[in-house]
Image (tube, rainbow, N blue to C red; front, side):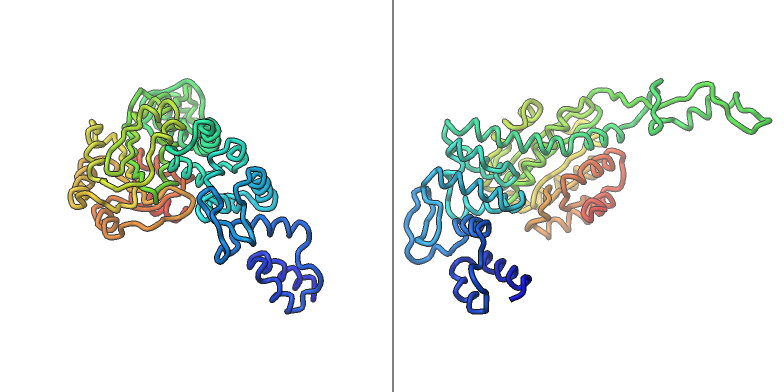
Length: 401
């Protein structure tokens, strides 16, 4: 076999598992199919993905193990496995394998032992799992779990905060002038108007005596921003991103920020959002039913000046309450002058299932319904606060333009 053929055969062996080795060898693979590193990689994969049918038994942590593979109940074995997958696979693959370990093998032990949890790669999926299991996490693990969530929160804040702040600052009306020079903030109209008397006719030049710049300092609470977040299980990633973005908004003096989460009940997280986004996330209960109409009714009480209010509903629009009334509330809100947007997803993973009929009807009334990656939020927010066409903004965010 050529070297390329051998490499391909090794990859198929890693994909298909130990049961395929005899058959693959019959195709002409000479010698051992896996080197030492590949063998360790195969063991790490086999622990989660090898077939568990047949001679299986309870693994002691809610899953099953087989005579072929498994992690069993041994903490040292789990710890080694966590180290192996982080050594052999890139971060995005590690995230998938960790999630599969919990879902396929029931390895809740990963989350219940501080020593093991400290070795887990912090990511959105793991935070969602911790949020869903928060009531079951033992006391000895809570601080480790909190640190894992904090690491993810800090990473997202670092990723988005600067651009969101710049977007909000750049979008707000600039009425006063500042002596501080800034090319992007130069007020050309005022500068020209107030210096016309200094026009040099001979040279055909305007020689300004004073140049005027817009003042970016904003008066407090100029806009109201409301994030109404569907906390059903399918929206887990969107819930995390939306909540953290809400905490960034809450730190801006120019915005009166409200963060609300709902299932069949409504929870106002505005206070926790402003103080500690980690506590806020642990205050969210993923799963349950959905009553969007009730949450919109609650959020409506915060709208004092419609034309200075941005309402963002983060939901897949599957309504368990009064769908007709829910749509009417959104349309009335939009017609009153509120900048109204429905984000079907706020994540890097694309748009999951959603109620297409509701989304289509809302779009016909001028309320855009679309999925958006977190990195497109600054542009979307800036455009909305500037009064740009929301449907055009939605198309740009949707297609990543």
